[in-house]
Length: 360
Image (cartoon, rainbow, N blue to C red):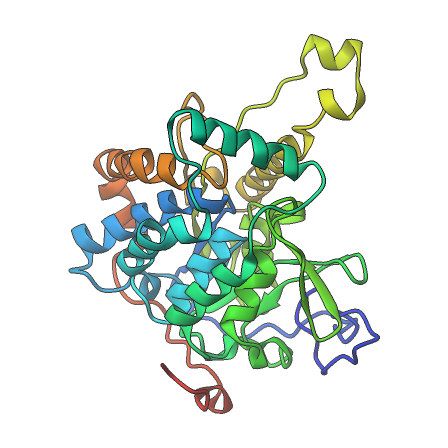
């Protein structure tokens, strides 16, 4: 699992070239913490983490990109798009505004009143047998912002997971922040973004170069453990040196209902995918806390009783999520600033060959 050491052929699984021995860890200063930012998937609800990060920039960083405060950023699906944007040097303010200003193009709102209700019912019915949005629209918006930037040109170390549906394997796109990682850096940021965000029932799986990619949320919607293991496996850091800021996009609580026990079937258990994503997140957070200690982690998410917002409900997300982000800043802003925003990180310079892409 992870970046292959050699370029795979079309017929091979993407992870076919992964080394089969322990990775040689790179030196890390004994007196420097390793700061990680982990961002969950959640569709248009990505407005929430983008707005939280944008608020930190405005309050504590004089508008500078918050990406400079983290040694490694992991993001899944919409979180992967935010991670890629930060790696490209964008500010969280720019990313927040992108979600708010262009999200309605990516997920066209159904509207209000009788016509809106009919559109929502039609979409719900269509989802039973077909994807409902055009990924080309998302691709066009991403290209406008990211251009032809190579993934390997990222100024931040990144981990972005999709699912390789061609071979039935999990995968993680990794920037070339370790000498073993020789393949993924050649990909464009737009391709990586489309691969990690190809959400089932919303988008057609993303096909590219003989691979079929599906949203990374199907196995790692909360990528906190991906980031933590990457830090421990690739660098000479101790668990006591690692500090993690994990941001969610809102999780729907799940309990088994009487009708599910009594009747079962696909209709009664239709929300099991959302439940699995929530439980994966809980497990990953618990594992990370056991490894580095809960005192070295901060988890930000919407309140458990916050009204559910669908992954594609741009209008509701724009209306409600920026306000929730402002509450986080008021309550936890100072603590997060002290733990994560106290200065630039250990310098990471992308390989020279990754600087030759065309910039918009």
